[in-house]
Image (cartoon, rainbow, N blue to C red; front, side):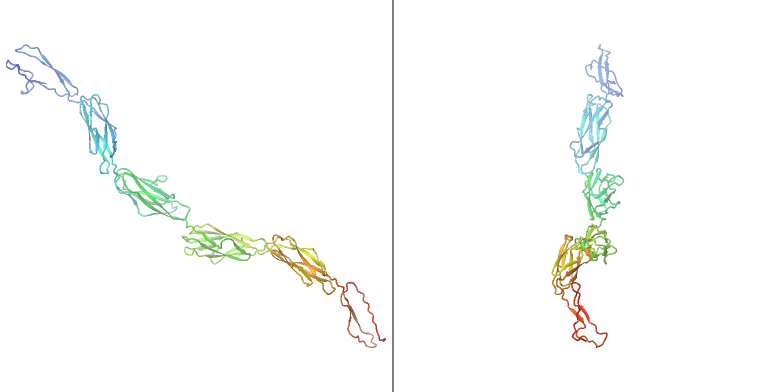
Length: 564
């Protein structure tokens, strides 16, 4: 619109010049109304004179600058929320550009809702030539004194040659100052477990303070027999707990189990709980006490030490006790394999000894008896085994037993020469003697006789297991006597010791070397009295005083002096 007189209502489009004022400047106001587009415009104003002057028309070109900026958008990359760490000197980068072509320079101003978050640069300038080219903005979060994660809004606003809506970008600031809290365990104190219990024991865990990020609580322990499981619903054993800002004070359960082991010792363990992530908390320990289900270790002590030797038909004693106090009563069972061995004693119940927690160190007596048998075999043996059950863990103990057999093996005394022995009076002969069977110990062979005129040298022989079958000699000699009679004797040979043998007798005939001196014996002695005329008369008995060496014919001659 054109207005030549702003003092008059409406728009005037003429100017009047007179002879008096033709040289005075008059003002023409030209205005451009708003339109709906954003394009610039032009116009031409023509000045035409009429009246007291002859003048050619004059034109005035008008350029209209549109006050409606073109539509566009502020583009921010990345499109997602920006995450930065408090105090990170590197920060994060936003990339900014425009869509659309501005009709003038555009200033994009960036503002932060939190003064701790800085923007560099805080404004960007775009021209029609670089509107689509991204420009970087570095976003950093300074340190603060709190421990709270913060959410900050960055607003991007464009002014100048483009019409664009403001853009906001959410920035999550991860606070590096963690809140201080504690790992809380319930119940407090020591967790008691039974070794091998498949149920195990439990305790619960929670945090005392709100974290500013997820918190992982890791559980570790030192005893390999102890297992920890933080999630029984998941296969295997889990050893971590996760707490968030929403569940930090909700208890989570930990299951602890102790496996069987080979020893009999109660055990312990220490479980350490350590937190990482959005809280500052000191490590916490949970003590575990494991009640071992194996009895305490000990030994069965049997005395005397070494092998027990018993004579057949005899007895021996064993003393038995435990080396360590049991946790409950202990039965020591005795077993053997030889039926000729029997076990007895007032402490025995059957073949069992019972030890209590009070009398475990007191010796109990077992009498071992070896029965007589009918054989003549060598020494017998047995092994007595002591086995403990009940309130102690002890290895079995064995005791070797030797039974000395008192039945010597059967055999015979062999004597040569065979048959009767004939010796001239004053002479000698030799007997050879040995045994036909291996003895089980030394054998003494004794020789005896009845005739004093017979001498044996030696009168005893000794045979061992090494020389029993080697002949030993005995000299049999006879002495002279005063008679002229042959003599006889019997030598008896007996064995004693490690063999059972029947006595051997050896008949001895001694041929006398003296001639016999024979007298005639007449009975009755003295004077024979007879009666005269007696037809019966009287009888004389005549014999020799000793046996002659050969038959003797004796002629008796009566010499009488009385012819009647």
